[in-house]
Amino acid sequence: MASAIGRAGANIVSLDVVGIADGMAIDDVTVQSDVPADILRRAVEEVPSVVVEAIRETDTFRDPTAPLGLASEMVAAGSGAVPMLVNGLIDALWVSWAMVVAASITGPQVLHASGDVPGIDELETPWLPIEDLRRLTRAPWMPAAWRDQHDLEVVAAPLSQRNTALLVGRTEGPRFLDSELTQLQRLARIAVKVEVMAGNGNGAAR
Image (cartoon, rainbow, N blue to C red):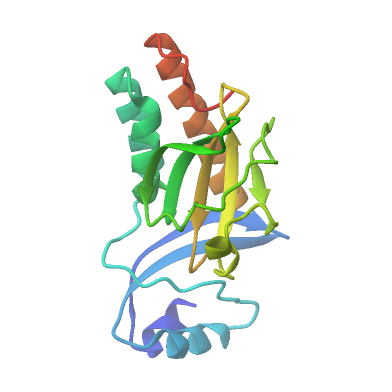
């Protein structure tokens, strides 16, 4: 694969194995190149058994240690861990947006948000409460702005309060890996414990 990337005119900056699926490694490869994404994809997929799931153009490099750094920052802060989590997930897990949603008799309320959150005027919460982290498929409760984004993935993590959840979304791929969901769940639990220890009952996860 490295040779194919080089022949296409790109330079590998970093390569991290981020998961295993069906006995095959899932790699997160950062390259520096002016080569159009479609040409780079074709060059790499000429290598036997290699499939390019997504190519994301960015001005920054993904730091595989970012989730650990976010966890350390939340613990050191002592309070305000949930807003810190919501703000930090953009860089830590490369989500497009994150928010904490609370269901109420007057409708959903967004308690914290960061990133390019799509329209939420039509957001409903029949899926609350949740017991475990889950991927949320397209459904009528989603605002039209969400359903119109065909590459949007949404994941929800349970909160300490039954009517509250952490929602994160990613557009333009790649899909959320199981390893990323595990990291998300752990970060949410850390945020909760920090808030509880600080005397704030509005934690982010069970």
